[in-house]
Image 1 (cartoon, rainbow, N blue to C red):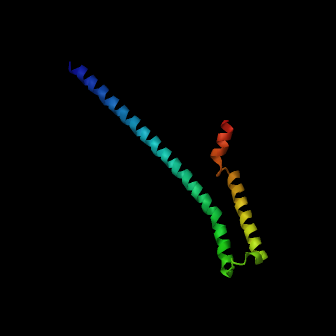
Image 2: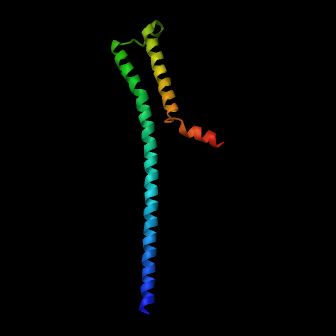
Image 3: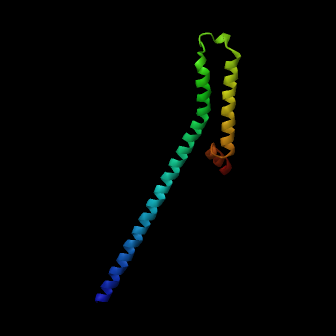
Length: 114
């Protein structure tokens, strides 16, 4: 009689340990998923920072000359060159990030699934 109770108790203990392992595995999966989402968010923020950093540097250096925005029709050629350079930097960085597959990943995956 005691042997049957002992076997039942052992089965219950093993069942509880199995449930504990399942809960731990589910929690680890959830934490991993949140970590991936955070990693994706940090990747996007880093890309935005990398794009804006050279533009901020150029505008900071060029802005020291004190451009008068009230006379836009008398705009110097240097201003146009700086604007074109900034647009070129943005295009090159976006092309670089797309080629490395750090940007526009979800859109391409959706197109491949269709």
